[in-house]
Image (cartoon, rainbow, N blue to C red):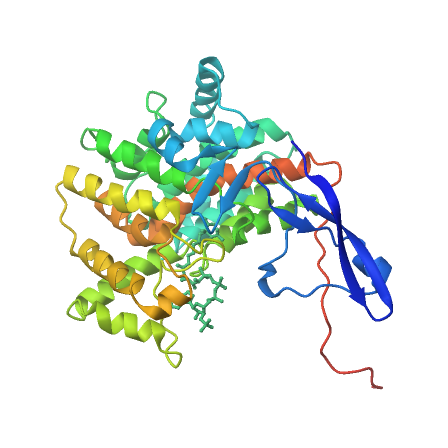
Length: 419
Ligand code: SDX
């Protein structure tokens, strides 16, 4: 499927009237192609935070922020969340179609047989202090995989990275709590194997709880891709220079770490805990979030694209109930989250700015109920987002027209002067 040229947009500038191609995507999005703007008028565009700038055309994910629509390769997120498992969604995003039964079992088999990391990599973990944030370890380990697999063999390195990130994440957790590493097991599927590596201890058998496996598959699917968000754009930016897959994904992990992006799920729980400690006075915090003199933000609220509900938040809000009751967990933070949402959605400040709960608002409550520590929440986001990053990197690498990312600027510094 491709982008179509549907006519012209006119820019009138000084004595010039310049026509630029008007493009349209398969879901009706329209864009002005400005690639010839500077050559014809000497002008560049300025768009703080790229809020209105398309960096590429892509066939992977579509979001309609006004309608709360999210499609992975055309399939609605609600259907994939209900019917698919995460490995199937990985295949769909990366290879572009839902796998046949044979393709899926072959893919699962490859992931199973690439899940070990080189024994020498365990030495890297020994160098970190126990307090090291797992995202620091994750990005360093992923970049270091290029030392073990220097050949730029697309598909095998894609399988290796998908299979090993689980193991690296679980090992970083075990290291942080001083427990022995639990190795991947070939008889467990992707989500079950991760939970086993996270929670099993050598001394006793670990029974996988289907509720946890189901919840993890759902969480990973909901995080799997999201168009050109900050970390995905970073992966494309770094990959556009010709950097290898591991270096590109390691940079995406660093971008995701920020509290305004993937780091928000950890900040949401810390915010809810703070409110709980403060007598659960959530109205006070809504007021603080509105106060321009206070830099407090309602973490987990707002989104650059969604100006309606984030469909992922809607699904997670529902599943939080189901997971917590199945696990017999009664978490007061869930009530505080619900009350916050209720008050904010009826408050002019949030309504006017179209601020709704995003994917990070409820995810942490489910991770908590699953026994995953708060400082691992953004790692969980990275595990989910990995197939999306890989798919976007691959799409760019396979695009013969792809160019190195090199935005322009408007200089506002000192005019030329002598030394
Ligand atoms: C993710 O891009 C993606 O798709 C990301 C993601 C993905 O799947 O990859 O969806 C994952 O990163 C979700 C977002 C997680 N971040 C948070 O929950 C952090 C809290 N939210 C915000 O900081 C903010 O809403 C952003 C970063 C998400 C969006 O920032 P924008 O689009 O740059 O919006 P903005 O900062 O310009 O805010 C617009 C207005 C401002 O007020 P005014 O200047 O108009 O008076 O809304 C206010 C902001 O002060 N505002 C908030 C707010 N978010 C925005 N006020 C209080 N609480 C908030 N959370």
